[in-house]
Length: 151
Image (cartoon, rainbow, N blue to C red; front, side):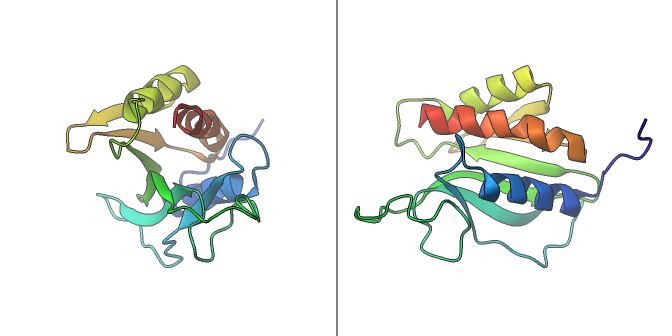
């Protein structure tokens, strides 16, 4: 049995980025944007990257040609990933454009996946999902899928 747990926030964030960018299933329309490869973890969390849906117009790593042949739409912010010394934090954002309450969708999916979750009382509303070890990265993927499906 493995005794060691991966609790390095930067490494957890990198694992999540790899899972999102390499996913050919329900997350294939997502890409990374504004990635900071030199993000240093802080107790309050340092922004490592954003997860967007659609053409991010940069060096993102989503599925190539997700909107090939179609007019490129502006990317829609799905979440922001922050790194802490001992965990990563995903902040799901509701830009208010859709009918679904995306932070509520994220909270329900994260709770179902067994991840620590809490609301953030700001405008626009956000839901914080904490990924506290490397094994929890896989459990965060259904949360992203639920949010994408609700968009």
